[in-house]
Image 1 (cartoon, helix red, strand yellow):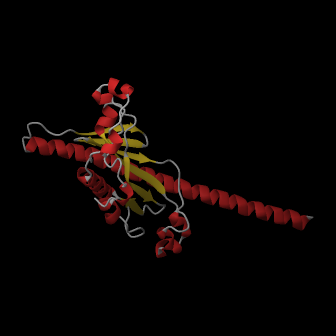
Image 2 (spheres, one colour; image 1 turned 135 degrees about the vertical axis):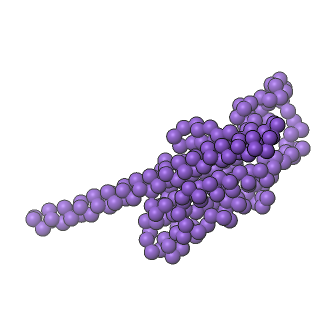
Image 3 (cartoon, rainbow, N blue to C red; image 1 turned 180 degrees about the horizontal axis):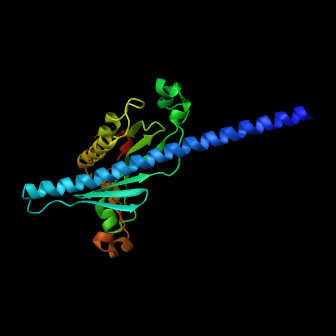
Length: 234
């Protein structure tokens, strides 16, 4: 009986160690991701100040709006011209699917716990979608930042974002890298243009839709509406 009780305690000890170890790992990753998100918010605010100084120095008579707005502990916005970038930190920690290339890297193979990451999403919306409450309009995920226990990071994303930040295990997310990420997201958005929706999709309009004002019309608007965004290389 004593042996059986000892085996039970041993099994419980192992269970409790796994529970505590996994929780502590996720807490560390969460703190790192939150720190990364704070660095992004700080750099957005610095960019706004730099932009205003630039416009003043260049004596720009009618500066294009370039405004930051924090909308919660885990979300912040940057509005410029006709676009809005929304940075959103997820509060949970993620592991990658078995087929993901990250799991095949020597960096993760050396320590499996390095693959647990927090996530910061970057969305691009038309600023008018929020201004005029066009709830049917589309936004696009242009990038997502993954941060692990070492503060190492990589980004899955379109063009500038996806190509510039894929050295997982080789670089850490610091103040300088956060600024580069924000600037790359802005650069991609500037060149990500609004395309005309297909005629066939727009040719039928209900009476109810036309009774609304033009600004509040419920016809869906998005930068790549009606096109295969996933295949878009622009």
